[in-house]
Length: 137
Image (cartoon, rainbow, N blue to C red; front, side, top):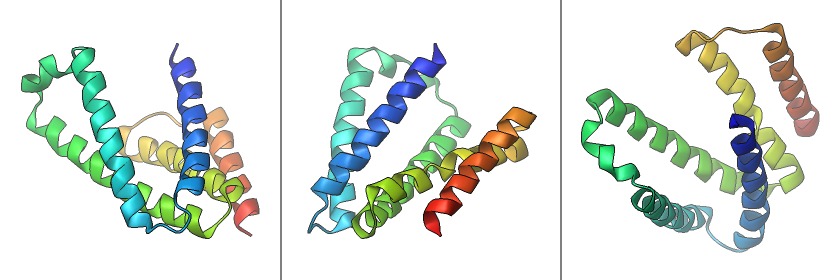
């Protein structure tokens, strides 16, 4: 079941790139990121409220808060860089290179989370890296 959500995530990420490329034409990318963030903020809270996700907010630990805040900071910085890259480059190159995050996530998961690195996962990460290098150079 996880892979269905992952495929939807990939599809919506692709739409994000297309819509953003059209939307940032002649716009300051920091402003564009701020607008996008407000929309996501409202949408996320509406979904959390409607689906009852806020009921457990009091159970969040200090560690939960710290790492969710750090995750939000990383996301914001990623979006700022992504919008600038989209403004300067072609979607067909920027979006795939942005997916180097998958290879980085694999490496970081092995190093910091102790997840196993299988040969299949390593090959996948190397192929992503190779594809990104082809697009960059």
